[in-house]
Amino acid sequence: MGTERTERTEIRAEHLAGDAFELVIRDHLVTVDQPRDAGGDDLGPTPTELFVASLAGCVGFYAARYLRRHDLPDDGLRVRGSFAMSDDRPARVASIDLDVELPAGFPKERLVALGRVVEHCTVHNSIRFAPEVRTRLVEAPWASVA
Image (tube, rainbow, N blue to C red; front, top):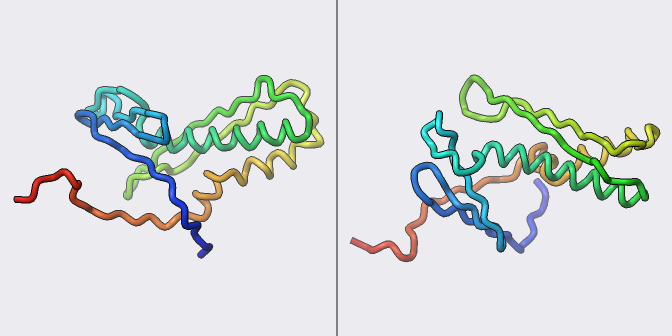
């Protein structure tokens, strides 16, 4: 296993109501919920949708940086993603498809290089080399002790 940096980034998921949570990421707020047909109020995307969206966004970021680094236009760059859930347990995403839509006139001789770059974005690497996930149950500091 690789080494772990000592600095940590904190993200909070604060319960709003029902199935909805507000994610606090630096100075950004993102609401996640479940669709109405799954018992939620559909106040935002599901955490699973955000997972796939984060991969699409990371691939897009790496593609855009590649284009700018090589003085290529990035107008019209888009990543379309779709996913399917597994039909067995444990509940998980079974497959993800990403289509990177390139700007008009992208040179064909650079396709392989760009493909290598986007296949190694940070989120993609984090799926390939799964991080250690440690979950602890802790009492909130404001909770009263009975």
